Length: 252
Length: 180
Image 1 (cartoon, rainbow over the protein chains, first blue to last red):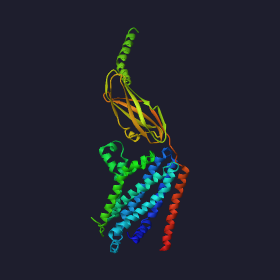
Image 2: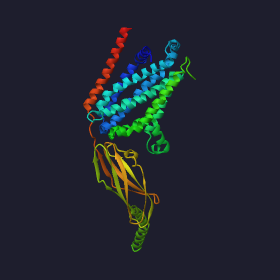
Image 3: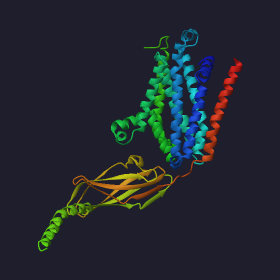
Image 4: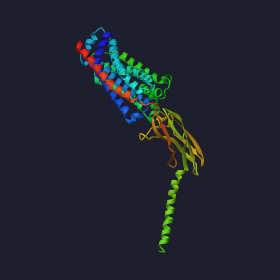
């Protein structure tokens, strides 16, 4: 990976793509949620482990969304700003270029996860669940961040418009998130069970209950981690494949 | 006057003849009885995992072939009822029963309660042949929170973090401006 390219991409993500302001926005949203949960009756009635689960889901959703927006616009913005040609003329390989843009989106996501650390510690204060909650947030959230950022960057390479890239990536996130909220008959049906077993987001949400509410050992939840690892590997494979297809107009 | 007394007696007779079936029908609901035998109450933190045992008795003179027994959950504090599949992996399962006259059957429903709150669990028996149901006495399930969210720490973090993030952002933008 080209260091100068990565620095340029990081600068663009932080300053020009408003990555830093997104960090402030995420912090304000998390603060508002924390104040509401700490002060309303329903929030006080929930167990700390339940509040932690909701907080981790919120952190993951916001972080992945921000990274996807940045990743989904990275190549398209170069085309729209007519700087793609000069980028392709540099001695940097297409793969190295893709990796730099992907890494900058992931780094910004990682910064957002770090911003959420004090919130997770504050919510889990006194419960002894802080380490588990942080592990879920950083490891499982990290896997999902790697996967969804890779998908967004891939779509940015393969499409002509940043709107399309962001919309398709966002839709994929929503579609994968849907089975996690399935209830009752849908959850128990064959299709529901199959989706729930394969869906990386549903598995990430499912492992929170044994780890945080039942305080089960980490070894008992490995079956929920594999779908996330496989999903991340497939997404990165898609990114590597699409990096060969970088062109001035976008691959159709 | 002499005519009125027989008319009144006739009216009373007619009223009795037509109301007896109605009373008899309402009395048939007692043909089925269900009661939760164990536990008698639950007060636990942070998780309750156990079996709810209910006894179903056929008090009628005939066999009841198509009975179904299932759990219901009511949240007293929030005024809500819930999907029982959230209260244990097999809490949603309905148990089919067939009872001879006077026979009693025991149904065991495994539950696992992760939530904090004040709940009432009931067991309902539904007779599909007569389309009647019978509900047990409510079982009080009071789930206490293991530890409360520390409001002071939460509020401090909620106030400080946006200020820190905003300050860091402004400093970084200022540095960039000076550099350029």
